Length: 273
Image (cartoon, rainbow, N blue to C red):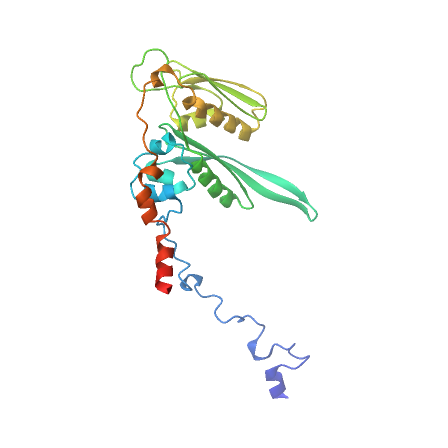
Protein backbone atom coordinates (compact mmCIF):
# COMPACT_ATOMS: atom_id res chain seq x y z
CA UNK A 1 0.00 0.00 0.00
CA UNK A 2 2.86 2.33 0.83
CA UNK A 3 4.51 1.48 -2.48
CA UNK A 4 1.36 2.34 -4.40
CA UNK A 5 1.13 5.66 -2.53
CA UNK A 6 4.68 6.58 -3.58
CA UNK A 7 4.02 5.80 -7.20
CA UNK A 8 0.66 7.56 -7.21
CA UNK A 9 -2.58 5.59 -7.50
CA UNK A 10 -5.34 6.25 -9.96
CA UNK A 11 -7.45 8.16 -7.42
CA UNK A 12 -5.45 8.85 -4.27
CA UNK A 13 -2.63 11.07 -5.59
CA UNK A 14 -4.32 12.04 -8.87
CA UNK A 15 -1.52 10.42 -10.88
CA UNK A 16 1.27 12.91 -10.20
CA UNK A 17 3.58 10.29 -8.69
CA UNK A 18 7.10 11.18 -7.53
CA UNK A 19 7.35 14.31 -9.67
CA UNK A 20 4.92 16.24 -7.48
CA UNK A 21 2.53 18.56 -9.31
CA UNK A 22 4.53 18.98 -12.49
CA UNK A 23 6.40 22.17 -11.55
CA UNK A 24 9.73 20.79 -12.74
CA UNK A 25 8.54 20.08 -16.26
CA UNK A 26 11.14 20.74 -18.95
CA UNK A 27 14.29 20.34 -16.78
CA UNK A 28 15.93 23.74 -16.81
CA UNK A 29 13.28 26.15 -18.06
CA UNK A 30 14.54 28.77 -15.65
CA UNK A 31 18.09 28.85 -16.98
CA UNK A 32 19.61 31.77 -18.86
CA UNK A 33 18.10 31.72 -22.33
CA UNK A 34 20.89 33.88 -23.70
CA UNK A 35 23.47 31.14 -23.24
CA UNK A 36 21.91 29.04 -25.98
CA UNK A 37 23.46 29.98 -29.30
CA UNK A 38 24.56 33.40 -28.07
CA UNK A 39 21.20 35.02 -28.78
CA UNK A 40 21.30 37.03 -25.59
CA UNK A 41 24.21 39.14 -26.84
CA UNK A 42 23.16 41.88 -29.25
CA UNK A 43 25.88 43.43 -31.37
CA UNK A 44 25.52 47.09 -32.38
CA UNK A 45 27.77 46.71 -35.41
CA UNK A 46 26.13 47.80 -38.62
CA UNK A 47 26.12 45.30 -41.48
CA UNK A 48 24.84 47.20 -44.55
CA UNK A 49 22.41 45.39 -46.82
CA UNK A 50 22.28 47.84 -49.74
CA UNK A 51 24.83 49.24 -52.17
CA UNK A 52 24.42 52.71 -50.72
CA UNK A 53 24.99 51.36 -47.22
CA UNK A 54 28.24 49.69 -48.27
CA UNK A 55 29.50 52.90 -49.86
CA UNK A 56 28.61 54.95 -46.78
CA UNK A 57 30.19 52.55 -44.29
CA UNK A 58 33.47 52.47 -46.25
CA UNK A 59 33.58 56.30 -46.55
CA UNK A 60 33.03 56.34 -50.32
CA UNK A 61 30.32 58.99 -49.79
CA UNK A 62 31.34 61.92 -47.62
CA UNK A 63 28.13 63.90 -47.01
CA UNK A 64 24.40 63.37 -46.92
CA UNK A 65 23.98 66.03 -49.61
CA UNK A 66 25.78 63.78 -52.11
CA UNK A 67 22.95 61.28 -51.68
CA UNK A 68 20.28 63.97 -52.18
CA UNK A 69 22.12 65.35 -55.23
CA UNK A 70 21.68 62.08 -57.14
CA UNK A 71 18.23 61.28 -55.64
CA UNK A 72 19.37 57.94 -54.21
CA UNK A 73 16.75 56.14 -52.10
CA UNK A 74 17.75 55.62 -48.46
CA UNK A 75 16.55 52.24 -47.17
CA UNK A 76 18.68 51.92 -44.02
CA UNK A 77 18.32 54.25 -41.03
CA UNK A 78 22.01 53.79 -40.15
CA UNK A 79 22.96 55.74 -43.28
CA UNK A 80 21.40 58.91 -41.85
CA UNK A 81 22.91 58.26 -38.40
CA UNK A 82 26.35 57.98 -40.04
CA UNK A 83 26.26 61.62 -41.23
CA UNK A 84 24.10 63.60 -38.79
CA UNK A 85 23.14 63.40 -35.12
CA UNK A 86 19.36 63.53 -34.92
CA UNK A 87 17.14 64.32 -31.97
CA UNK A 88 13.74 62.68 -31.87
CA UNK A 89 10.51 63.54 -30.11
CA UNK A 90 7.20 61.72 -29.95
CA UNK A 91 4.48 64.05 -31.18
CA UNK A 92 1.47 61.89 -30.40
CA UNK A 93 0.40 58.33 -29.59
CA UNK A 94 -3.18 57.50 -30.46
CA UNK A 95 -5.17 54.24 -30.34
CA UNK A 96 -6.78 52.99 -33.51
CA UNK A 97 -9.34 50.18 -33.72
CA UNK A 98 -10.44 47.69 -36.31
CA UNK A 99 -13.68 45.75 -36.11
CA UNK A 100 -13.29 41.98 -36.49
CA UNK A 101 -15.55 38.99 -35.97
CA UNK A 102 -13.99 38.43 -32.53
CA UNK A 103 -14.54 42.05 -31.51
CA UNK A 104 -12.43 45.18 -31.74
CA UNK A 105 -8.68 45.00 -32.32
CA UNK A 106 -6.84 47.95 -30.77
CA UNK A 107 -3.43 49.09 -31.92
CA UNK A 108 -1.32 52.20 -31.22
CA UNK A 109 -0.24 54.76 -33.78
CA UNK A 110 2.87 56.86 -33.07
CA UNK A 111 3.98 60.11 -34.73
CA UNK A 112 7.68 60.95 -34.30
CA UNK A 113 9.68 63.89 -35.63
CA UNK A 114 13.49 63.83 -35.94
CA UNK A 115 15.86 66.67 -36.80
CA UNK A 116 19.26 68.19 -36.15
CA UNK A 117 18.19 71.88 -35.87
CA UNK A 118 20.42 72.54 -38.88
CA UNK A 119 18.50 71.90 -42.07
CA UNK A 120 17.40 68.26 -41.81
CA UNK A 121 13.95 67.07 -40.75
CA UNK A 122 12.02 63.81 -40.90
CA UNK A 123 8.54 62.67 -39.87
CA UNK A 124 7.62 59.05 -39.23
CA UNK A 125 4.36 57.21 -38.53
CA UNK A 126 4.04 53.63 -37.30
CA UNK A 127 1.17 51.50 -36.02
CA UNK A 128 1.74 48.48 -33.77
CA UNK A 129 0.16 46.40 -31.03
CA UNK A 130 2.57 47.81 -28.41
CA UNK A 131 3.46 51.43 -27.76
CA UNK A 132 7.22 50.82 -27.54
CA UNK A 133 7.24 48.94 -30.85
CA UNK A 134 5.25 51.71 -32.53
CA UNK A 135 7.68 54.37 -31.29
CA UNK A 136 10.74 52.42 -32.47
CA UNK A 137 9.18 51.85 -35.88
CA UNK A 138 8.20 55.53 -36.17
CA UNK A 139 11.76 56.63 -35.37
CA UNK A 140 13.13 54.38 -38.12
CA UNK A 141 10.49 55.63 -40.55
CA UNK A 142 11.33 59.23 -39.68
CA UNK A 143 15.04 58.67 -40.31
CA UNK A 144 14.30 57.09 -43.68
CA UNK A 145 12.20 60.14 -44.64
CA UNK A 146 14.78 62.79 -43.66
CA UNK A 147 14.88 65.60 -46.23
CA UNK A 148 17.07 68.73 -46.54
CA UNK A 149 15.48 72.07 -45.67
CA UNK A 150 16.59 75.20 -47.48
CA UNK A 151 16.77 78.36 -45.42
CA UNK A 152 16.99 81.98 -46.57
CA UNK A 153 16.74 85.62 -45.56
CA UNK A 154 14.12 88.29 -45.14
CA UNK A 155 15.58 91.49 -46.56
CA UNK A 156 19.37 91.94 -46.50
CA UNK A 157 21.58 88.86 -46.49
CA UNK A 158 23.32 89.55 -43.20
CA UNK A 159 24.45 86.75 -40.94
CA UNK A 160 23.28 83.16 -41.25
CA UNK A 161 20.01 82.12 -42.96
CA UNK A 162 17.18 82.32 -40.45
CA UNK A 163 13.86 81.84 -42.25
CA UNK A 164 12.30 80.08 -45.25
CA UNK A 165 13.54 81.39 -48.63
CA UNK A 166 10.01 81.92 -50.00
CA UNK A 167 6.36 81.27 -49.24
CA UNK A 168 5.60 77.55 -49.21
CA UNK A 169 2.35 75.62 -48.85
CA UNK A 170 1.51 72.17 -47.60
CA UNK A 171 -1.66 70.15 -47.22
CA UNK A 172 -2.81 66.86 -45.75
CA UNK A 173 -6.45 65.93 -45.42
CA UNK A 174 -8.42 69.09 -44.72
CA UNK A 175 -5.42 70.90 -43.18
CA UNK A 176 -3.77 73.66 -45.21
CA UNK A 177 -0.71 75.53 -43.96
CA UNK A 178 1.25 78.40 -45.47
CA UNK A 179 4.72 79.29 -44.18
CA UNK A 180 5.79 82.90 -44.86
CA UNK A 181 9.28 84.44 -44.36
CA UNK A 182 9.62 86.83 -41.42
CA UNK A 183 12.20 89.43 -40.28
CA UNK A 184 14.97 88.39 -37.95
CA UNK A 185 13.84 88.37 -34.34
CA UNK A 186 10.20 87.64 -35.11
CA UNK A 187 10.53 84.05 -33.84
CA UNK A 188 8.07 81.35 -34.89
CA UNK A 189 4.50 82.62 -35.12
CA UNK A 190 2.84 79.21 -35.22
CA UNK A 191 0.82 76.70 -33.26
CA UNK A 192 2.68 74.27 -30.96
CA UNK A 193 2.72 71.42 -33.53
CA UNK A 194 4.29 73.30 -36.49
CA UNK A 195 6.50 75.28 -34.13
CA UNK A 196 8.14 72.09 -32.90
CA UNK A 197 8.68 70.81 -36.45
CA UNK A 198 10.07 74.14 -37.66
CA UNK A 199 12.43 74.26 -34.68
CA UNK A 200 13.82 70.81 -35.46
CA UNK A 201 14.30 71.94 -39.08
CA UNK A 202 16.47 74.87 -37.97
CA UNK A 203 14.07 77.68 -38.96
CA UNK A 204 14.16 80.56 -36.49
CA UNK A 205 11.68 83.11 -37.86
CA UNK A 206 8.49 82.72 -39.91
CA UNK A 207 4.78 83.41 -40.04
CA UNK A 208 2.21 80.66 -40.56
CA UNK A 209 -1.38 80.61 -41.76
CA UNK A 210 -3.54 77.50 -41.35
CA UNK A 211 -7.01 76.36 -42.41
CA UNK A 212 -9.00 73.19 -41.87
CA UNK A 213 -9.28 70.73 -39.00
CA UNK A 214 -5.94 71.43 -37.31
CA UNK A 215 -7.15 69.50 -34.26
CA UNK A 216 -6.22 66.35 -36.23
CA UNK A 217 -2.61 66.45 -35.14
CA UNK A 218 -1.35 63.81 -37.56
CA UNK A 219 -2.55 65.72 -40.61
CA UNK A 220 -1.34 69.01 -39.11
CA UNK A 221 2.18 67.62 -38.64
CA UNK A 222 2.25 66.06 -42.11
CA UNK A 223 1.07 69.29 -43.76
CA UNK A 224 3.85 71.25 -42.04
CA UNK A 225 6.44 68.65 -43.07
CA UNK A 226 5.25 68.68 -46.69
CA UNK A 227 5.37 72.49 -46.74
CA UNK A 228 8.95 72.96 -45.56
CA UNK A 229 10.11 70.00 -47.67
CA UNK A 230 9.20 72.07 -50.75
CA UNK A 231 11.82 74.73 -50.04
CA UNK A 232 14.28 73.00 -52.40
CA UNK A 233 11.70 72.54 -55.19
CA UNK A 234 11.78 76.23 -56.16
CA UNK A 235 14.63 77.18 -58.48
CA UNK A 236 15.42 80.75 -57.44
CA UNK A 237 17.89 82.93 -59.41
CA UNK A 238 20.73 82.30 -56.99
CA UNK A 239 20.60 78.62 -58.04
CA UNK A 240 20.91 79.39 -61.77
CA UNK A 241 24.68 78.91 -61.80
CA UNK A 242 25.94 76.11 -64.02
CA UNK A 243 27.37 73.10 -62.23
CA UNK A 244 29.53 70.37 -63.68
CA UNK A 245 27.67 67.08 -63.86
CA UNK A 246 29.22 64.42 -61.63
CA UNK A 247 29.03 60.68 -61.85
CA UNK A 248 26.55 58.95 -59.59
CA UNK A 249 28.14 57.08 -56.65
CA UNK A 250 27.04 53.72 -58.04
CA UNK A 251 28.75 54.51 -61.34
CA UNK A 252 31.87 56.01 -59.80
CA UNK A 253 32.47 53.10 -57.42
CA UNK A 254 31.18 50.30 -59.62
CA UNK A 255 34.41 48.28 -59.30
CA UNK A 256 34.28 48.44 -55.50
CA UNK A 257 30.65 47.33 -55.43
CA UNK A 258 31.41 44.42 -57.75
CA UNK A 259 34.27 43.23 -55.53
CA UNK A 260 32.28 43.43 -52.29
CA UNK A 261 28.96 42.15 -53.65
CA UNK A 262 27.70 39.37 -51.36
CA UNK A 263 31.26 38.45 -50.48
CA UNK A 264 30.49 36.16 -47.56
CA UNK A 265 28.02 34.02 -49.50
CA UNK A 266 30.38 33.69 -52.43
CA UNK A 267 33.21 32.64 -50.14
CA UNK A 268 30.98 30.09 -48.41
CA UNK A 269 29.99 28.59 -51.77
CA UNK A 270 33.63 28.38 -52.86
CA UNK A 271 34.54 26.56 -49.64
CA UNK A 272 31.74 24.04 -50.19
CA UNK A 273 32.92 23.40 -53.77
